[in-house]
Image 1 (cartoon, rainbow, N blue to C red):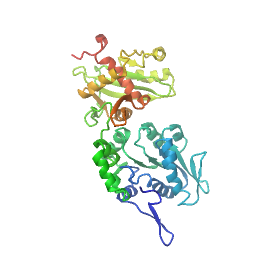
Image 2: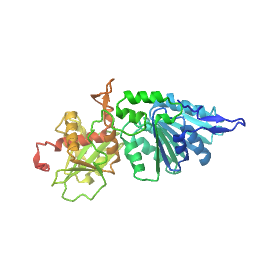
Image 3: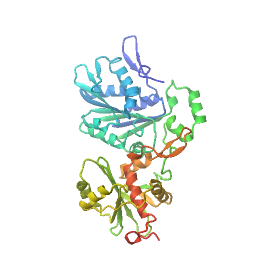
Image 4: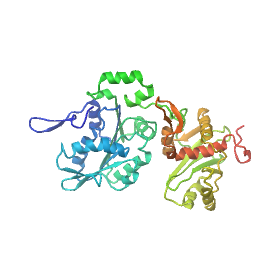
Length: 414
């Protein structure tokens, strides 16, 4: 494995020189604002990050910089040792203060703020000039964390280096990789296999290829996106089912699904073509820290003829929204799996299309999955079930619309 100490050398004159492999060099040379290194395991991603950040600090000058990894465990075990090895050992004059989780320059005029994405509050406390994100493809590094990082960089229009192995088909695929392939000049994606690292054994790569499922080998050793085992909506086609927005005719009925929460109130709006019965997801909503009346004021503007939301036990939430002028019906379905089956059936029959502006919907759809057992087979348990508020809102409304017994208020599928 290439570590930070392997990536540099000190010549006979005491001059520091970096020894980058081809993939690292491509990322180093990129002038794009958002550079994403999506590569195989132990390909030299994390070891590269501190040096890229060091160059940004030299070019941008004193101020704040941000380093974020997916979880606190990764922060302790992986990211922090790499940062301390470079900033403080190889590069003198830097001091890590544990209580702040911050590395300070000797004159205290520059800070490198270290955070984990699973504690998003810490991402809102600084205005930064550049950021390095490590393992941002993991499930715990959510779209909201990526959005928070961009806010912290907005004043300086700061650059980002992101280094990760792909783990799912969430925002990293839909908001970064797909934009890059579509030709967006803000983004650069650098992909390479584990064996791009000269220290990675070829026979270990060959062993993994011979023994692992194809999707897992493609993601973890080739750095390529693949559809992982356990995806709940494995029939959802990101190329076919995601479409550009269009003007919805006035005579198309709209339906809303709502998932309640003090921190996570989420909603999705579907318009239905009355001639074909096909649904189009056209609006999404995900907010917290507001009253029921404030949520309702926004959602009433969607013009939905019917709202369905919440678990059967969440009657008080429905009454709060009713009082605010937005009646919410209780779902007829109490079984999560039945609701999932109904959404799945529409995806399989090409009866749901999604506007490509629904970033949170696309992210959740690409990450929504079941836990795997020790043999790598999907179980019945939904992984991180409480994280998928848009998916729950969709399930509530689609579960009611498909196979509904109350045909008087719904479009006739016949």
